[in-house]
Image (cartoon, rainbow, N blue to C red; front, side, top):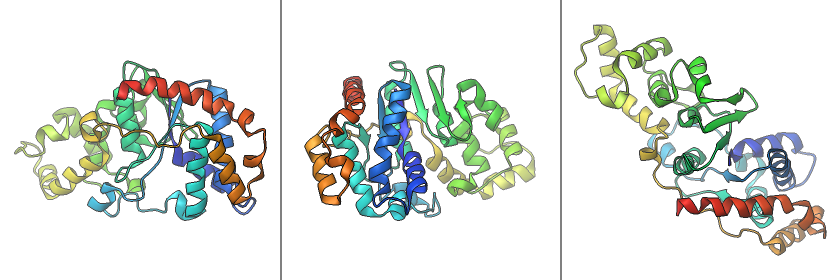
Length: 286
């Protein structure tokens, strides 16, 4: 099953067509998804960020950058979500949660049941990789369980610990230790949660750095942890699935010709077919 970091697709659609068509997301994202699903030939689900996220409330600098709806506009974004659901796409979006958390929750529940392909370049997802779960993105291509240590210097089991210690400027996670020092500490002491509140017998300068950054380190780990315990249960998929009449109504309201044509049902049949199969397989989450 493909678990798709949908913001990646939406930003690609926006940058490709902004200024060229009136509704770039509603026009382009379904087409990009159709191509992706057709080429891969498998079940799939899309994951979107909520507008309000608890992580940003806890740490305002966390991923402090505009969301796709800030670029494309609220109306185009909401019309895209409704159109994708109407065409048969299975989508997840939940108040207070970012796409990463929901995707991880679904991945944990499907572990050992499905072969999973995470479509994203986000290195946070490397902590989810296993013999049956891999990643694929535009930057690194395919990343498997065995590739992670060559990329970050730690195995998937310690990715969250490494990011919490070494920080991640892309996501606004402050650095506590240098990457090299973080790796050495993980190699000798293991998971951060196992020693963070203990009196470590280590180099005084290293100990002082950890003690000075202890509160931030705990927060960092809270922000980057995608373990099953941290992300909890997945929510239900978005409603409005498979209603082609609703898609045509959106097209009529927005003046999007391809949504009002009779061929829309055939053109996007693959989204409905694989979407139906996805929902069958997701019953394991209930």
